[in-house]
Length: 110
Length: 119
Image (cartoon, rainbow over the protein chains, first blue to last red):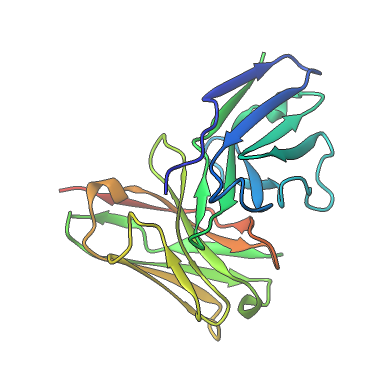
């Protein structure tokens, strides 16, 4: 099972919006609406930001939104803030009853 | 407060074995599917294994299949990972992670325990 493909880095200025892509196959991203997104700050455990493609855990910031088209899912961060600087990972359920993570994207706030 | 606390990491020689534990508190452990996820130094996240609530279904990544065994003790609110035939590429921080109830997403994570495989 190969890792899902994400851009290595994405950057933006405070207040801007950025989008991170996550490309898989019809056996994972394209086959199920079970894509989730995680934020990880250095030395910390990951934090769930989005599940089921576009659902935010209750109480979490509405600046984070998710979508999917075909085999590619996307995470959009609106109104970029300094605290959004972190690594972001997508994950998907697969047809083999396993899970797969993306390669990870480093977000830099300029 | 829901909490997952991993333990058991350390330094092991190639070919050796180790057992990781994850103690859960603040949740009805028996209701949740549980997972192990690892992260090699400076690298991305890698899903390792999942076990369903009653241990009826267990799944492994190809990279660890046949070498690692996941198990759980619902009475003791604990998750385990028995790791055999360890290799240098198994060196990583190992996280215990809970599946968000009814969904395929990891909503609660432990702080991780470090495994180093080196001679």
